[in-house]
Length: 362
Image 1 (cartoon, helix red, strand yellow):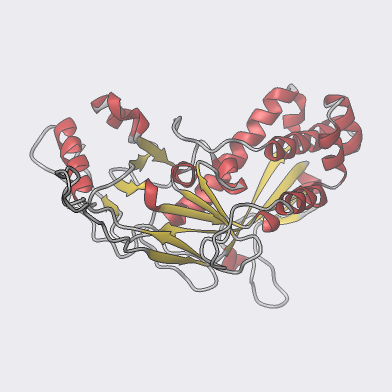
Image 2 (cartoon, one colour):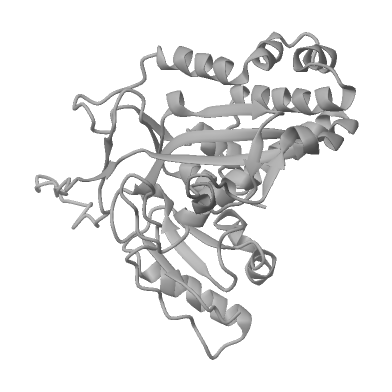
């Protein structure tokens, strides 16, 4: 649905998906993963190597990548390893094309935490030039730089997905598609649920949502659904001074209807599964930043793990002598479990670049 400026899928991610597919096939064929991998991916040595130890192989790839010298500013910690627009981290690539985080990362600025604990992302509020056209011999107008900066600190994010061994009965391309789609959906829901919220940040746990501290714009009333939607778009945009790359976000359920009102918005209206129905946000994507630590990105696979099958982490930290419920045995239920861990941060480099509303009358 979000066929816009999506981050390029790195070859490493394709290898990860193929390795996970080999795990699923191995269960169905009752063989080991390496043997299954050689059968379904002959002539692909990277996939075969990854099947031996996926987590170790992935760490090796990130270490090798980190040995290259990316462009750096002269001030340590000031966007120390700026990747630039259109270049996103593994989590953004993994969650595309479903998540708003992926789209914003592709259109905003991506920074790496590699080698630093925190980083400062510079930003500048756009302002008009008092006069571009000048007469001969007249002074040239000067616009003050007025740089500000947002400090980004990494937060640990993690999720667990699992796949049934019955998936191994399908053809390899179909298995890959299912795994890639499910991982994207799980990652998208995990990060967008906080990103597109008014939640306050929790020190050492999570960053604040983009709507935190932003007073909702009153929804338009009195017109037809299409007219109210058009008015809401204008009202949200007017709340952002001189937007550079305005991106609207709505719920997955509302997207088809809203696009039918305004087909020309296909490149600037995206959907997220975590946005509430009748909610709409406007974000100046040029001032969005995402930060990931490539060395901390980790994917582990287990076919023997015991899971506490809940999305409420407090159930895991039960009193001594008890454990969260319900539990699921991957071995008993014929499952392949995939755990993803990443160090991530996001935010806006300049304040006042986000507007939102709820209760839209469309």
